[in-house]
Image (cartoon, rainbow, N blue to C red; front, side, top):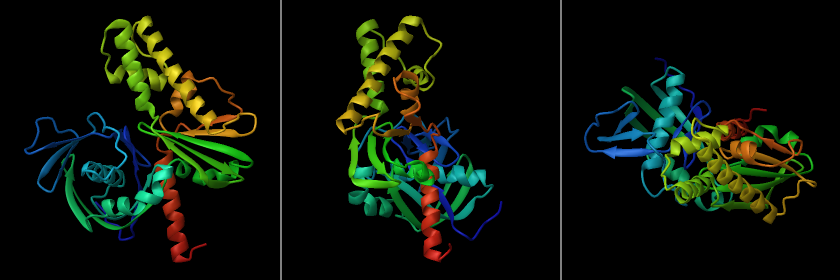
Length: 308
């Protein structure tokens, strides 16, 4: 496998539900073991420890640097991207992000967290990797997902990034983000998941697995009985109504502005929301934010190097 001396920019969207890169998406789950586990299809070995990647997802935490989980997930994301390039050794520049209103306070700490080692050797899915870190950039979530299409943001626009843990809202007026009109709320899709499960337990006394609920949320349907499907749809519709209620609290008016929706919650609005498709654009590329991080990091590199 080849080694390229020029640093590779790898964008990683460190979500609470999923980790996304420009080319892949996997659950934000880490289970640590002292010894090698029996099932190891997504096993990462680093620093003498064993980590199964992608089982379930992490609980919401306002500080992603509280443990090593997101660092381990970063290594797994890098491995996936290098594997796509047929590489096992590389110099890597990380491009990541944080919720809009957290960037200023947590940016430097998150950057230090990602760069806690100058280089790292680890094994993922039976393949040995060597990575040398050359730096990291941390950008605001949501905005990064549309950074390469700002020409579409003439007039007044509201950007809504709905992830698993948080919902981020930003105004972009005449192609410029308005910093004082940025909001972060704990109203991600996990809140919908909890509401659906509570509704099903209350109505039917049944505990329904996340896999079934996620399928309905993602596609609008599933191979289950009509009464369960109806109950899930009703709860999801109530959650989406809550999204628009929150947006109106931030002075969203569909007659005066366009709404751009990014993040995993966009599919819920598509399936369960009532909106004017001429005034609401749903960007349903789950990897859009990670791609945006790479776009912005590449722009910064060009400016540093004086490339026009």
